[in-house]
Length: 304
Image (cartoon, rainbow, N blue to C red; front, side, top):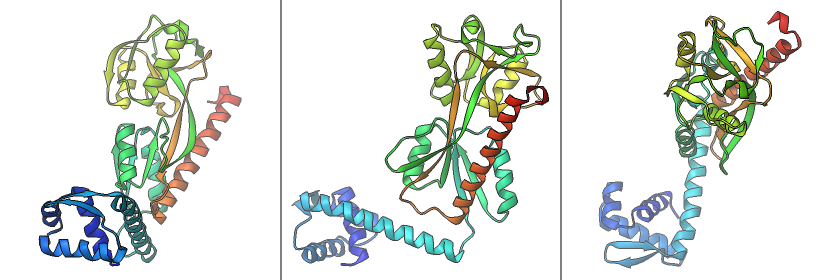
């Protein structure tokens, strides 16, 4: 059995048409048909039910397809691993994020450790990010909320309290904490539904008997602080998104444990390069430092 036979078989199984498969593979129909025939002879069983040039995978073909895809997948992972060990090519780290507030600091820390590694970062919705991870088009993801899928490993790296951001002249600007029910008549600015923090907050408010009133809904979380500062509305913001340069007061939520989980994601079965493993270490170390700092602020509030 040859690798070429497996490649040809998988393409024919995908298209279930000899002519289309031959065009896709840039080979003649005759050559493709003979290759599939030799594979079936090697296996001792037909893999397709044939009607002219149209093929349909039969039970033998369906079962063999699963094995063939796994075999080629493992070989490709082995090729990537050898290249990584030999350092034959400049590595670009492909990243996708939904929790982006600390990405600049994390990338800065990683660049200090591995300045020769390039990286490409995409800000994506959770379902888009998970799809690219499953396809092998990104190496690691930083997501909030975590993604639960059979092939995806999810490591919680930080639990991030949600705060209420208020303008400096607001009635709550002198408060250290506030209950959710006190906010039911306020106007808010926020991201659109579907973002982890927004969905988490809306769910908590509904449990307290009200739905937040939004005067602005967008796709850029970083813009919310400017809108709060301009007194357009209040905002629910993760603690890690705070910027001391903003003229905003942050108020803790006292009657509800409202926090988002930030998770680092990678594919369980795909090879993870040395660069990706080192980036994973940088992320976990960075958020461990964030957690320590938060604990110190709680224990010593007058020093924060």
